[in-house]
Image (cartoon, rainbow, N blue to C red; front, top):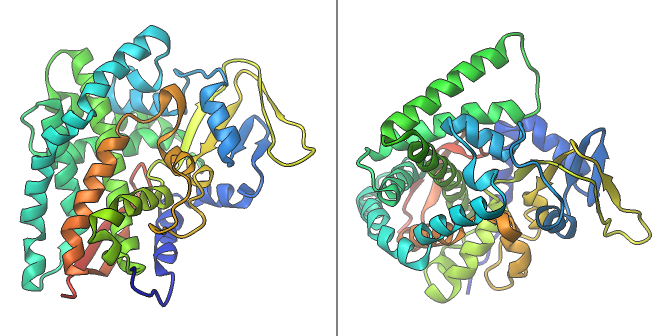
Length: 377
């Protein structure tokens, strides 16, 4: 049984991440979230699970357009967006290559790497010391990604380069004021960060760019998601569920749903299409080439409600939308579940509480810059 929870503090704390890191974007999303599909000029916001899945499965998309996930991937790595902007046979070949990396065997091969980091970094909890979960996860993700790519790169250096490249690249498609000359400086800084990332990874340019794309995606989502999930678990006293294997898998899925590491998927429409409105007697939304879609995974997966409950999780088909759907779903979902599962299992015996938290205002994805915890037993 999950211990009684006197207050739902997890959601209140997690809301600070959005308000502190990307306030303009999430104010817009929150104001429109009750409408399944809403057009604002050439921007179409999609909040509901049905049109969200429809857009990814059926709507023709320009996967090489600027101000999309593919565009950010190109800026961050200095190469093509690969998984993000490919289609057809090329995309299928790339996904087959990625599938071997993120398969059950591939994840099992990487698991000893992050378990070693957990053992070392969590040992101070047993002596009453505080531990920074963000620092822990930064090392965990960097070490795991280096092993996945089979490169000899210090974990902290790879993590820092991947996070810097992603943060700079993301500025190009986030709403907000654009000061004169800022775009030019951002492009130069992004190119420099991409060059540093490919230098670290080494090898031929195409291979380095491909490895950089995987590093950027894996490290940034991991560093964004796991500390937020840990904070939510501590605030809502979910550790008893995390302490048992029979309930931990459901808890992991629920925490990934409510944290939605990649909360918005920006896309550009390549051809005419229509998104159905799930409200009765409402006409669908016509899409034209060049329309920008903001696919809000956060609301499509019902991250706004209910609270994470391993005893009564939302349907898997809905919760899994945080990883996309169809031919372009995230191939790293298995890895994300496995890493969060092991982090929660390692922390649960300590029943940690949050002692300090600071929002990361520069990251590409909503997250904490620092999250300290201490054991209560």
